[in-house]
Length: 48
Length: 279
Image (cartoon, rainbow over all chains, first blue to last red; front, side):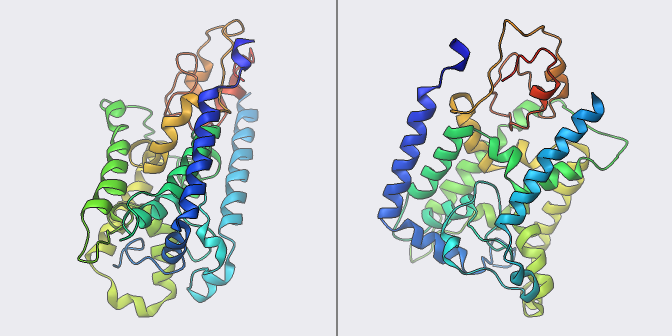
């Protein structure tokens, strides 16, 4: 049935997302996120 | 039917609240005025949830994206962009409707009885495009281009706009840390004014921040039409009664466009459809 088909564009985009995440993790982006997230973000709370 | 509809909406709110509690369950932070510093903090959460909230266990994807883009060694955030692409491609703006703590706050604020409740207004459609500009300018371009001598950018969206950061991080941390009081200035006042405006508008307009400002919603909205899990309207079953369009608080007509970029997948249209044409 036409309406119940999975959209391959969505599946491809999700797969591309996973690939990008993996690449980002491999090149060390998670470390930057962790460093930012474990310190109080003065800009975020309206001080810095 | 009305009673059933209301009960169903509370079911969604319970899930939103449960998710908000789960992802903000570092209770010691609320007691000590500190934030969680464990290893889970490198993982992004799907909703707008400030990582400086004392209870936050994960990282806000918008804050994380600005942090990576604004770092001296990376100029594109593959990890965060990939995460947003994956979440969006799987279910579009489902996260907005079900997994965003700031969305829940706006949902609840809109339940406050008030004499004026505005559905749509002149310029509403145009104003909804503002969130794409906010994303491009404050989340990507400014942190990328306006850098200091070390090549580091500032998270401009967090700094100048985000009311979620003020509510979830700014207010509790300032209340719990008297040492921060001396550092308060015009920026804190500005952010609190923005938060107050957001709160007041949320009582009158359904989810004004999500509709007009949220860069996270802007990213997810792009994936709504192609998401793996999305709504489908069975044209053979649809009677064209218009009940779905009438119940939609985001002012979408699902029959015209079932996966409109503004749809937050709250599911009210599906519930109200007597012909069960929306799946």
